[in-house]
Length: 368
Image (cartoon, rainbow, N blue to C red):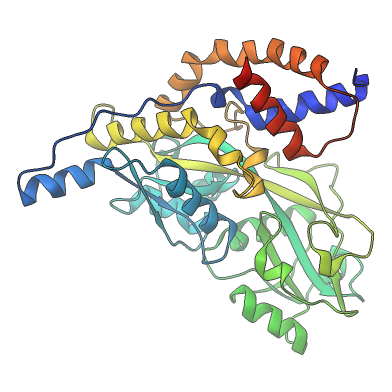
């Protein structure tokens, strides 16, 4: 029998990874006849296409948007169309104003960003969320001489391109930390090159680890991640996090660096109930929640394993079809706890990695 500590750890892992949604799959829709006219073809394509604004090429949002399409595209029933974006900051405006943009990756601090824009009204009524996804960590790369975030006061620091998620969340985090810097907006590869040449003192990225452009950067013996302890008082959108050599082997020196993180949500335009746009978003919600276990496959981004579909987000309103789905399947989420207890009792007391534990749980459940 597993120890109590191991049982508790496995329980937390499986409940986090499984969430209530993996228990039900959306039934495939019946085949449709081919449209008879050009106009009918265009109408059907628009009725089944959901556009999601992601991030810059190579980034986490970009990859996860592509995986939404890989997993959920279903012939003529549902098509996910990922769109390149600047990141969470600009994505919120795209969701609100761009015709044809239905969904997007935004941050838990995004609504405050929009509330601060005096041009906007009733923003909570227009942008809501489907699900809380994962956390984006604050990365600060600087020369070894920079020991603390406070050492960056008055220095030149890059916050990615204007309108990016780092541009808003990174600056907001620095304000919360009480550190005023000379902010610069350049893309991340350019910022790292400027850092090497001494034209910047630090490069900031707020993104889900591991960030490819950072993972590929060679810090040598000159650069490191600047520790960012979690302050006693800070905006509730921000949580403590860590960066380690396991996340970034080139930075690996055996230590774990404290930092901050901000949550990412799948934002949605709150279309009027009964409209064609609303109806296709209902189909998206059914597919996303009903097939969520497919995002946990080994080849998918590891950040999917942080998702708890039922998690609420302070200050945000959940999109009505998403809340309706969770309400309809609430009993299945409760039932999974007793299933979990039986699964844990059946497991040998041997160590296992996260993927092995979860795959064992899925096989055990399917066999029953």
